[in-house]
Length: 512
Image 1 (cartoon, rainbow, N blue to C red):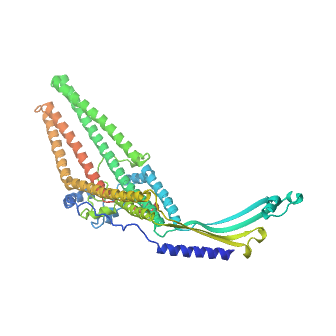
Image 2: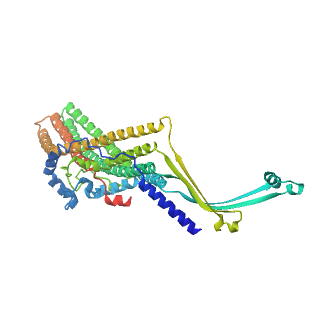
Image 3: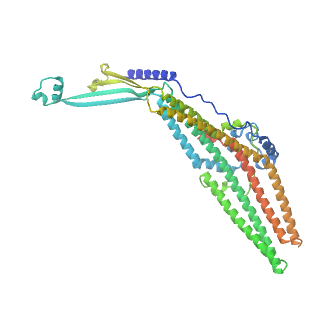
């Protein structure tokens, strides 16, 4: 029996591999579509020059010894892991927390498991399904029926009983194995494989977006806390001014108009504090929504917007072809390759389908003699199906596959265009952010001096209260603009880092 089984398996394997090696693949040859974007970013050089002018001072304040990868201009953003890029320990812990709890990333991981199983199911069709079957058939036939069928004479004694027969069987067989002569099964397996690889890239893209979103929300919360601190400082200053004017008004040194103006300015400052308190609370809620769980207070930012990255510029003087390595672009390309294979499967439907059913085993009326050589049996049932008329179904299926490919080519091109725009916008911000920061810093410095001078003149009676309050409002507005510019400087760097494919960490990839 073992020899028979081994021989059967060997013959089936040899035949199957021979057929598969000689089959024709009807899928069209895959060619990556040309990227519908310029070869390089027009503002990349300007961004590098502008960023380089502000790199040294900001980098020194964040890290004494930046990592080599972060400072090497030959290292692409995609090769800089987020643990290297973000040096702020609290932000690192928050990102790690998000990678463990974010539901979008969890769904992406589960989709990978699902598509991996689907691929394994489809790939199994490339190989014969071999099974062992054992059976027993028991049947009682009345003697009257048996004698009548044999044409023999009957008497009462003979017809009053019956005959019980037993048939025992043990078979090893292949059921409806399709010979993939025209690549239909192989192409369907290719579709499943590319879909699986696409979900892996989608997971990577989801992680990049998640790291970027967490960093930006964390920085936004820091900025909102800084704005709240400025509003509170302004409120304290307004309270001091109101108290001073109130005392002067009681002594008759200040008019009722001055008193009401000071009171209105104080209430405006109170309102600003209340609004900024709400904004900061909402920013924390937004951060925790992205993270997927409560962020410990120890990992939240304080009222500062100091740089939290190891570098202040990303190596951007590279061709736009680097975008073809972004996970979302790679996922779109896997979809194109799946579409190509789907066309091959659709073309194979026009050709004959050959399937094999075969078995070998033993059959005997007695269980004790089942495996004797004389009881061996075999069966071989090839089947050929040739489509002649299907009402245009196969043609419609092929046409739909071709249209799907054209749609996905357009989607692929749109994905690259979107990626190019994201990088271009970030570079546009980086190109002038140093100048903006310097100008806004000088504005705050000038407004601070103007306010201090105005306050001194007011106390000496040489300037009106209205002029002093105006200078105070200008200073408050300038401080708010400076915080917004600082936030823009950092979020534009994070956005550029993510847009160029950064945000993946080898440690996380290995763990997943």
